[in-house]
Length: 299
Image (cartoon, rainbow, N blue to C red; front, side, top):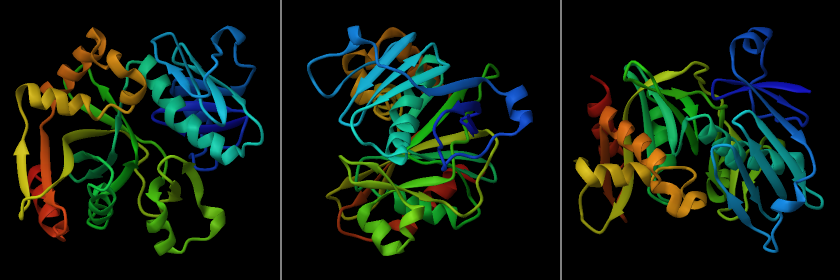
């Protein structure tokens, strides 16, 4: 069995997951343990469709073109492959949908966005495709920020009222055109998302291996206006924007606003500022956006 660390948990896996940091004996003794193993998917859960899912606090599952995933009790993921599937591609689904459903069962908040840490704490960078998340994150990482997570960020609502971001693994999810410009060796790149044509690429800068208190959530979006604008959200718009960052939102569907999820979202919005930054569609506004973010999280 392979032994790894991910989101503050000790993971035992029967397949190699080369993007994950290797765990130590100290991790085994001090961190919650989860397992990833191969097992037949229960026949009574199979449906006629190829792609389907169910998210619950005790048993969750997902079927797609490549595999079945079964997540149970917040500590176990089992998988069954469909046809010839590489371990790298299987690992991408295990560490995306699989881990996000497991975190949901454990009461952790799985958000869709990048998380980086500066001198005063961490900031989440969220937003839709093409909003500039990767560009902004890359620029901040060049300015003494350290890397915590990309695409799937996991938060803990601490009992003392703070919010902590847990360390994932030192890989970034990038679009094909960005990967091609980087001209990386093929053996370093992991194809991770067929629908969006994205790849996992190793991050070679400083990776934070410890949880970091979160200062703010920044949501990037596009606008037809000619200048950058920023708004600190409040009230219902803040809550809705927060729930819109849930990683499991496509799978939860109507259950996104269940009482339990709603309470978690309200708690998160009561503890953190959420800023919406809109940037012009056809303008290079990176420098202005970076200065805005730094002004909000550097004090």
